[in-house]
Amino acid sequence: MDTFLQVTAYGLLQGGLLALVAVGFSLVWGIMNIVNLSHGAFVILGAYIAWEMQSWFGLDPFLGMFVSAAVLFCIGYVIQRYLINLIVNGPVFITLLLTFGINMIFIQSMNLIFTADFRSIQTSYGSNSLKIGAIHIPVVRLLAFLLAILISFALVAFVKRTRTGLSIMATGMDRGAARLMGIRARHVYAITFAISAALAGMAGTMIATIETFDPAKAGKFTLMAFVVAVLGGLGNLYGALVGGLLIGLVESWAGQYLSGTWVNGIAFLVLIIVLIFRPNGLVGKAFYAARVEL
Amino acid sequence: MLEVKQLTAGYGRTQVLWEMDLTVGKNEIVALVGPNGAGKSTLLRAITGMIPVRSGSVTFDGQVIQGQSIEEIVTRGIAHVPEGRRLFPGLTVRENLQLGAWRTRDTNIDHVVELFPRLGERLDQVAGSMSGGEQQQCAIARGLMSKPTLIIIDELSLGLAPVVVDEIIQRLPGIAESGTSILMVDQDVDAALTIASTAYVLEAGHLVLSGKAADLLADPRVQESYLGVG
Image (cartoon, rainbow over all chains, first blue to last red; front, side):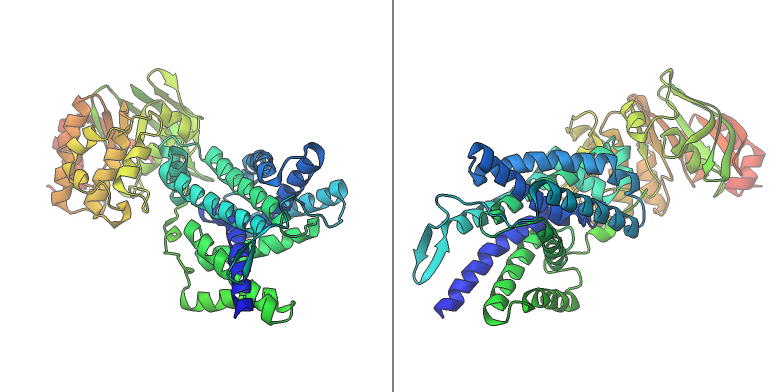
């Protein structure tokens, strides 16, 4: 029983981070209908930036993640504004091809710059843990989990409550009508993508404090973001949270009770089962079916 | 105020409009009438930059606006209520109205709620769940939020019950008097010509008649083609 509780706690903590990885991915998909295959590369790049920050300036990763966020925000803005915007009306296949290409460029660049060696971000408090009953909760994991949840909620509040957020929602629902309001859709798209990349960078930094990373791991995070986003309900930001926690739990349980190679398979099995019974995802409504193109 | 001269436009290789001339003056209501496919909506789209102008010119307040982006054109004070209303379906009425004031940042909704009291009761309702008439009122109100000097209304009565159309149409003269000129397209030729001061009749992409709306209403050609008289 204690093992089960321990595994469950780890799963939930891990799930919070998966949610943060997925929430930006889901936002971009829901608003622009772009499946961003380079999302995982942004996660890893965020981890490297924070690692370098710590190595050069001794910056704590929980502060360094804001540097990662800022850098990735800028990179994300430029990529969307000057690259993806060119083909944003194209068929899904074309957007997949482009983001796949961007992903390759990022991964290979990281291989060249940072080498393919495994790294992780160490902190002085990395081995501290809280003890609740028989369960150990590492402080770093708890902190990362709480921040991930907080940032996800902050994103939802931002989208729902601010002027920029409203313009993002409106542009996602009807780009042509949004432009008729005087909203610069190209800029809004770029901001949306930038936010998504920034969140990926933050998630990557926090993941790097918990596990090792290398450029080749990017694909895993893109895949996880995809599963979580679809599971939760496309474009639904709360859905990404719920989906993230569920996948975190499933992965953790599968990792404990089945052999390691089953983990991804089980994650997809859960996805398939959920989609059979709830085609719009766990929290999804047929909301984005209302998308209209000019 | 709005002046269209010798405008041609189309979609892809297909030319839809030939040498259009049109003027909208201050505080004026102008109606475009004509059968389906005559190019009425295309003309409105060309004015606000939703499709490119191929030749001719569009000037607004003395400034050439053709070739500019939609965003730039609407920022000059033209609101376009598109065909099919195109509200943001998942957002509330209030949010839709606030988005209408995007360029002016003046999100005070009192003046449009006064005009369409029904919207006042529906402010927190999701726009996509309202009836067609309420949606059209919301779409016009959204257009008026930025206090434009010209509002373009496409297919005002499409899919609406006559009673609802009357209710909306009788608001238009007040809007024009308070400083927002109106350029409208409507299936209901009788109603459109009754409230408009000037009207243009389009057929197959050509301007075939224009003049005072009252004169056109009495014109036998208009009566025969559109009003089922004679």
